Image (cartoon, rainbow over all chains, first blue to last red; front, side, top):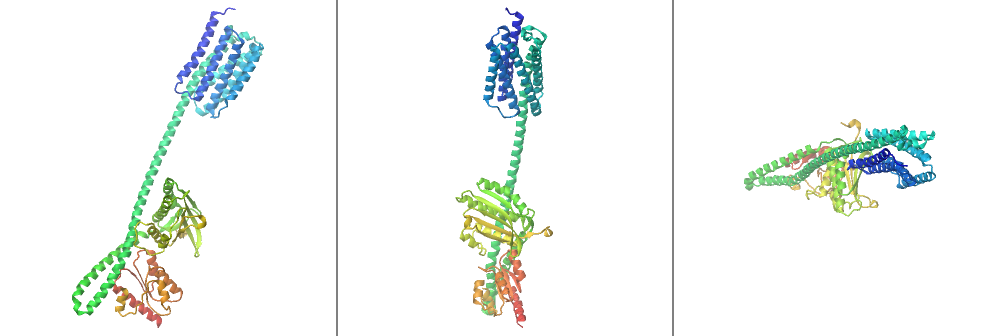
Length: 495
Length: 110
């Protein structure tokens, strides 16, 4: 039977449209085609091939053509649903499900076609398949709208509704007994025309809708990336601020350290000058007594007196220096040990992590507990002690070096104490240092560890506390253990 | 030098290198005035004074110190029965303190 030219033209137009549309959308999404978009476009391409085969089938029917177009339709709906589902969540179905569906669907449509039932059950099955696809895709699109808030998805939903309406019409009418010929492209009946137009318009709407959706999705992603970049920049700024604050604290620490060194130097100076000055005073006094007794030595009295005056001035200077030092060291007040530690632990943690030393802090008492101390000097003492531990740990070959800081409550000598314990698993103190810690202040090197610990002991004693410096029990391995026993302040005594 | 000055003033002076040496050498029953340095090798002057007090010996004590740690000097000042002298002090100050200490000693003896 010869084909009417109008029929042929219509079929060619449908084929051309379904060739140009996917290619055009593919080209328009250049640069935006992520993996999900590629799956969707593959689905659209399969649909176009299927529809083109349908148009060709109206001109030259063959069973192979029918089986092929059915499989392309099936592949298209599966791919498009997969693309939407992946957009909704990152979970993906294994490819064998697609292959299994295609094999089963291909077998069904092959049997239906070869049994001569394509014009009835085959077409009804295809329409039912598109109805199911339309429902599932609409559901997924609605979920996507909740996630992405893109208006382009409404276009896809409209296309799906249009597609479902055409297939619902065909399935309904065919189940109702309408002859399949009335739905052929060339039949030019109202229902045939509606089906063709609805599917073609649906194709156009879906193509443009998805194009817009991808662009909006990319724009949202760009916004998210920009927001993340902004957050990262803010984080970087905060980090820089923290680093700056840390540097400032380290500067303060260095200054306190310098003051501390100066203080220790002054202490030594006062102590060491006072001894020879005292001897000089006694010597001059004795000399003066002898000179007075011996009249032949009268001429020496003036010189001795002058020397006594000078010695007295030097003694006054030492006294002033001592007073100044005493004024600078007696700012003792209730201090929260926990808060004092919290303020400096971030700095120490930075230092320990840089040196690959583990640092743990445990407060076994009420964090609000107060002790009598000078907060600046207390922090300085902790810095010094932990600095000693860090030096000992990093200079040796300690495996898994660690420093433990504990705040404990202890009862000793009929008194409650708050104990700050700092211990490490380094080599520990050698006997020489430990013996020096109980000896009087010596005029040794001004920057030695022993001297720092001596000053620490003195400082803690000023706060009515005491220091226990030693090594960990041998059963726990090597390591130094320094304990600061501080007097707690009860709430009614706090200021 | 201190012993030399005091001897020249007619005092009977006995010196010891440390608190332990004093405890080993001296008869604690004998009345005397003690001049103690706060810091000494081994037992401190404060500790020696505390031990003697614990043994029931109430000797008049003059403390002297060249240190500048307030916690030690405060304790010495509070426990010194005669005087506390910061080094360097004048010989006159020491002699005056000794005089007061001896008066205290004699009043305790009578």
